[in-house]
Every structure is written in C-alpha cells, then in structure tokens.
Amino acid sequence: MNDNRRSGILPVEKGPGVTSFQVVAHLRRVLRAPRIGHGGTLDPDATGVLPILIGGATKLTPYLTELDKEYVATVRLGVSTTTLDMTGTVLETRPVPALDVPTVEAALGRFVGVIQQVPPMYSAVRRGGRRLYELAREGIEVERGPRAVTVHAIALEALAAPDVRIHVRCGKGTYIRALAADLGAALGCGGALASLVRTRVGPYALEHAVGWGDLRDARHGADLWARMQPGDSALVSFAAVVLEPADAALFLHGHAVDAPASDGLVRVYGAAGLFLGVGLARAGRVKPERLIHAGPARPRVMPA
Image (cartoon, rainbow, N blue to C red; front, side, top):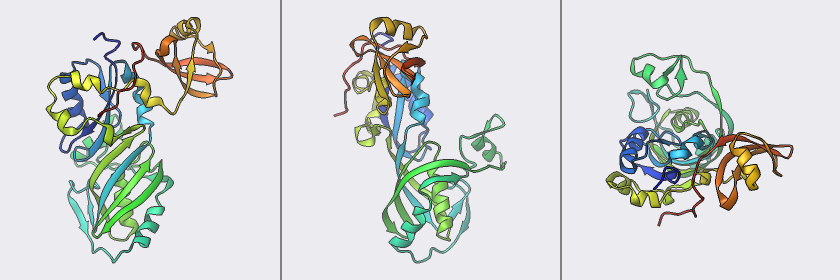
C-alpha cells in the first residue's frame, strides 16, 4: 500500500489501565505507520472511544479536538480526593444525604450550558512549559483560574447512593472529573469520579469502534486497515466544496479560488472525490487552511 493510501482515522476502544500514548505506540508497531496520533486523551483508567489518526490524517488533529464528546460517568458521592477520581489520595469523607431523583437532577442542571470549570491539578494543562500533572506529582500545587467550557446536556441514568451514573454531552476541554467533584460539592457531600466511558467523539461512536480485545491482540495490520475511516469522516459537519481540476491545482499550491460556499470552514474535493483538505470560505472564495495529501477517496468501511 503506498504512503498516500496509508492514511485515515481508526476509531478504537481504549481499554482500562493503559495510556492513550501506549495505544498509539502499539498501533504504530502493528500498522507500521510512521505518522500516528490520537484525537483526545483518555485517562488510563477511563475506557471508550479513542480516534487514531494515521498518515496525512494527522494534519486533522486540531479539528478532532474540537469535536463534541459523550461520556457515561459514575460519580462516588461522599468522598473528595487529590485527583478528583478514585485513584487519588482521599482528602475527606462525608455522609451522603438522602437523595431523590429531582434533587440530583436539579443539581445537575446547574452544570448545563457554558460553565466555568477549574482544571484539575492532575491534568495535561500546561503551566510555565510543564504539565500540571508533572507539578502535582512533585507535590506542587499552582493557582488555576476557571475556564469556560460547554456542557450541552446531562442526563441522570441511575441513582444508587453513594453512586450516581450520568450521561454527559459536552464540548472540548471539559473535565468530567471536575464535573464529578463539582456535583458532589453542589450536593453538600463531595464527590469523585469512580468510572468513565467515552461513548462518542464527534461522528465516531463506541459501538462502531475496534473493540479493545481485537486491538490489544492485533499482531498484523490488514484487518485494522480494512476498518480505517477516510480522513474527511471527521469533518462531516463541514459543508463540502468540489473544485474543477484547474482550481484544484491552484488550491493545492496555496491559492484561493472561486467557489460557492457559505462562509466558514469547508471540506474541499477535487476530481473523482479526492479530498484535498480544509478550506476557509469567505465572500465566494475558498483559501487553503490545511492541505491533506491523500489518495483517491475510498468508500467508508464501517466495522461489522
């Protein structure tokens, strides 16, 4: 397979107890792909959808991080920890009050919309060139200002004190661990994340991802290549623009070209459906934002 076709997005299920980087390293060996990355870190104990970007599709990483995500989380009430989840050192335990569904749903409602959230110390946020979790492991805590994040919806799935299971649909940068702690504070007893499953990243749903067992045991890449999604599958929310051959050549050389499109980011295609990259449309013209060197478009292959 030539380098142009060794490109795409492979939605996989990350299993428990491994880092997102370890999944990438395993797939680099199996797929023999020199360029490979992921579209959004999951904590080691969390499981669920991890989009893997391969070859030219790695250029689409900034757009993957912008995608909405969905999670199913279990919050353990009555406990507060250093990491905001149950892997950390317990700081405090408190009795859990008698709770009913309306009370918990009312508390959850406070966290829907654009909210202010303080990133956990055990997070990948950078401060002074270092990750916060690196400082935390050295016993250093730094002041962290709140950041605006968007939570589109939270549904209460189960209430069996001290555990509360919720389904969260949110935008980029939302920390479910911080949400768990904030929910516990709102209920007056503290809380920490007990388990987390990411069920969707943009168009990639867990039920269509390569299962953790298949991924962990994979020793040859043929089956995984067959389940690869084209790079533009991450951009289904963008309008599509198709260019004539002459304009496509100009676009690939960095020039803006005439093309009818609504203002904003668009998927740009050339002859025979060749995905050229991402363009920015404005006033009837499209200029390149990120060019993708890919082979002829292939029909999407969904997992069985």
